[in-house]
Figure 1 (cartoon, one colour):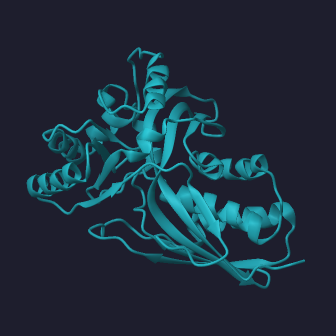
Figure 2: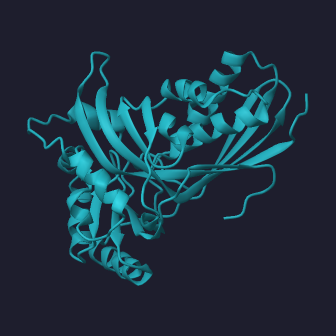
Length: 312
């Protein structure tokens, strides 16, 4: 069997443009409906041949997020899904997986999930397993709600606890949206936020269809009326600094502003690069705290695999 020497993968982070919690399940998780879209901030992953075991090495490239704890290699989702794939298929070989992390962790950007999705897709190619997308997504669902969607790639509607996924066709115009990410360096535990979540409000179930219709038109006008995150109030209650961050962003009147996932990252949709620069300066001056920020765009896909080094 032909053995590839090395493959390189760019694993993209994500934002949630819509996140609705539909209720608690008997297994303790929550049913949700969410629109997840990849953005062009990446972890770089290199997979090379190793005789019979899986070895993961992590490097970090974060600015102003020194308080976010690093994780052990054995706890990395990329390592866990690689072992699961090896056990599922009985593959006798191994892999040396190097991950350069640029996506902040515990930040609502799906960094760990992106790595896991990239490793699943990458090893399927690298080990010549020829597993179906459905099989890879079944493996992914055992390790995190976002991972199946990120294995599928592109804009995805997630349902159930994340295991039910379908691609969404969005207007190409939204790829030109300028989106600014802000993170105040707070570690937010997703499980804790879901435990604290308790919504007694009757929500407009038509909101999802309004959001989808808007995204398919791709217009910027009134984007703030269709962005929705059911977890936002719960996160604000525990972390007033994130609430303050959103207030500070909104002083510059972006098209829209929302917490991504369970946070702590907040994103703002703005008109152009100049508006993005002005917003970043405004927030940094007025928040007066360590702050990570990036200007990104939405992507048509979330995982890129190549057999030669990737360029940014």
